[in-house]
Length: 125
Image (cartoon, rainbow, N blue to C red; front, side):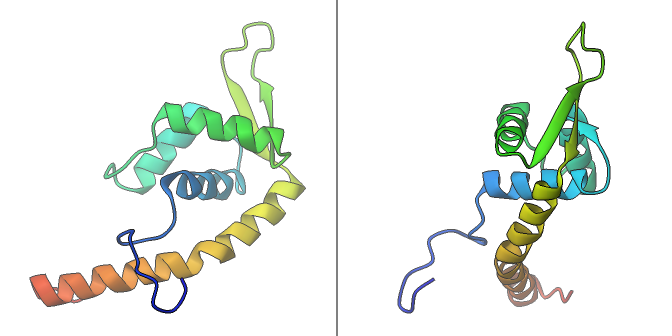
């Protein structure tokens, strides 16, 4: 953000789409998943407080695959019902780049939330 420029998003500048893309790559960095399992795993890790919709997950998986960051294969090619995704080497490199790019946004969000909890609710974390 430039000096004197107003911050219009609260509390973070990372878009929901960018957040979900980062989380997909994060999960695929450790093991393979299919689309609904990615959605469920994100929701589980966020204690059910938020979950991406299938309408967000599947277009992002298609985009990540077309960009060469992940690859997918059909669990049963003749049925084409479950597509399993794996991260590529290019995807790992991209994940590390966007992870670093977004860290300051998460740090800023955490700072804001901690101070709001302390100031308004008298809660220190």
